[in-house]
Length: 432
Image 1 (cartoon, rainbow, N blue to C red):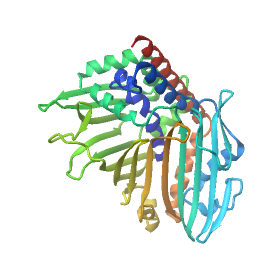
Image 2 (cartoon, rainbow, N blue to C red):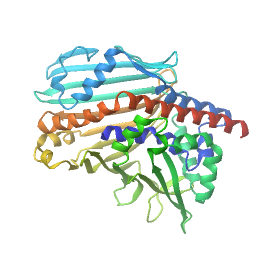
Image 3 (cartoon, rainbow, N blue to C red):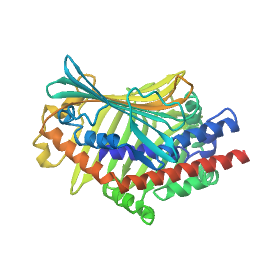
Image 4 (spheres, rainbow, N blue to C red):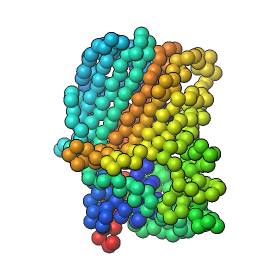
């Protein structure tokens, strides 16, 4: 459930990025209008292709469901040859890999199992690597990498895109609202079936900076006619959930706050000339390393399941050929579990946060052939126990609910959304 909540947030990230300053942020994707159009079109096309009529080879489909079922009990998986594309043994035990290649062919985004898959060479192509290695009798390390070809947008331009977005937010809320509705009307309509920008409050400060609060309402009821299964899933899992992400520095300054609760997503930040500033206090340059505090709690029947006060190190990677965010969590959060599950708590649930901790990276880099690669990396260690098996069963229940008609409808919704963005950018380029 929590993984699906995170996926839902990431899937909405691109269209939401233009809700405050559509025109400027879109045109910042290139040095001129033609370049911006080409770069943004390829970027969005890569995501459109990913959700177009998705098909999976039986080995891939079997493998992903088995991995979801036994992610917290890998010993149940390691001898299942139908899951893996590579099987080895090291001095500490079993090492397994599932490698999948995916891309658009004949208007279908097809996943196949294949060893030694190269990095993506075309827009929309993907490479998935899911590896597990044994550390001891009952401890394991998962390493996941997903690479996605998204065109030739130079990663360095992401700084200009972010600056344009934040600079556009230094205007009255009415101006921002007119901007995104005028520049991206099709996107507004497509996304508005699920998310609507209810409130924009931009307050000018004495030092010339602007404090901004945006509120997005999450309401799946408008989807019901065309996406009934997806609507029910969102109402069951997403709408009752809550999450929060805060970025702070060592001096206690707060740089970013985004939280969703009671079907309202609120984003708060402060900006000056397109540069983020702490929400309160004197203006200063944002450090590359911050502290991230997260919370994610989902509903499972009458119970709440999740965590709060998960604190980690957040680093902004700014290299010539790469822009990325990475986070590492080494402190156990506060768990929110049913009473019967809390009675099972032991060292196994703390184990992922020991040593190097849980690692997450999301960003873009330039590949060997010039293709820009969107990449996400996750490393997490697990220790098998009753509580971990219980959590695994819980997550697999949500995964089972999602697979099938729900996933098909979500794919169609996202495909329509990204196609609307491409059509808007085409129109915007003609008049700019």
